[in-house]
Length: 497
Image 1 (spheres, rainbow, N blue to C red):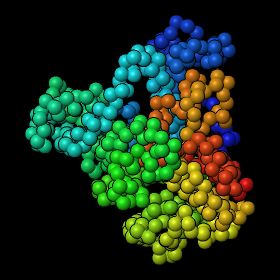
Image 2 (tube, one colour):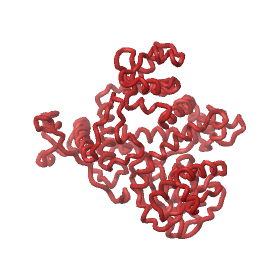
Image 3 (cartoon, rainbow, N blue to C red):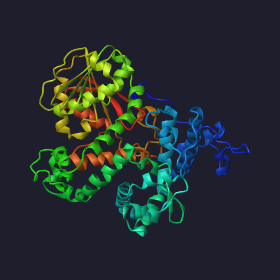
Image 4 (cartoon, rainbow, N blue to C red):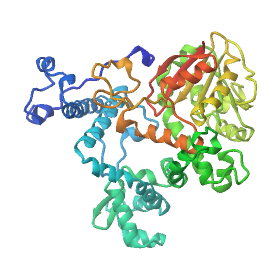
């Protein structure tokens, strides 16, 4: 895949036909159809009102989305049924057309909702959004999805569910109905609930449940501290990780700890968090491997800085047999690394294609130097504020040769400014069009949520391209490319400045 900077095909739409042979857009408006070239010349997107442009984007994106379904021989997604869609499988890599059309469709639908809904109603809803996390936590702790999975599509009365876990029936009914109103669970008949496609992910065997469980405990408890933390005259101006809101919530300094992770390990079982993060990594691997030109690196040795148990390195070694790798992390991670490779790629251990090194990326000199090494980091920089990232990057830069590359897998944010009417595809990282925000609105909300999470938990941040340029340049590096990936994170490529 070419770097984002080189552009990509413009977004377009095809006809979505009804039984009468007319497109949905022909039937939706008495005005000129954008489907026809003559009409397009007279009625371009830039000449439409915001409302009309959003309407047109919803319809054209639906056409393109349905085309992508057809091209991929994919089924239509279900809202209330229990059947998972093919693209719900983390191992399935959908087409680029599918990803772009879905993103624009979700963003346009979200923006159109925000346009037609009363802003007072919307703000009132959002002020009560914490109830969503609270309700999800109850559903997870009650193992509601597991019980309903056994019941099948006919469902179970909430009274039976409540009895099994010792909850008050009317209150559990309220929780499940609250979630069913957002299409999480399905209220088959009054008081009787079944799983649907969304709630089916909350069964105990699914790592999405681990993520939901962790966030609705860890993050929800911290959220009330954020405003006081930001307005605190000392903590609000600090970028010390211990001065983040989590530090106040969990009394990290007061407990004698020097970092959040040690404190959390003392308070809770961190295996839930580990499963959640591992699953998110596994879901991103197909896109990262397919959408960055790893083959162009030649016969290189990957140096995975802060690589953990090798969640990205292992599939790279599977996909590119000519690669070797060194995984660098804390000593306590080495056992997980050995187990991971022994179970999934034992030949890499026996042939010495991969090895583990104890490495402190804040203090240790990078021992691997020269043209034969490619350095990479996945989800490392977003855990740290700028001044800490500069330390990490300078140690890597000191080992790099003029031909060396640094590959950064991380979320690339965009500002929430509205896409200009005359924006070219090359100007954008992710699919977005006027009058949607560059940040993709509803389609980019998870990234914005994680960015907020980084701030409240670690005084850290996700970054825009300009933000990445700032920390790279401070370390004597320069960005030479950005690669949009079919994953929640993307790839930045850097070399010595």
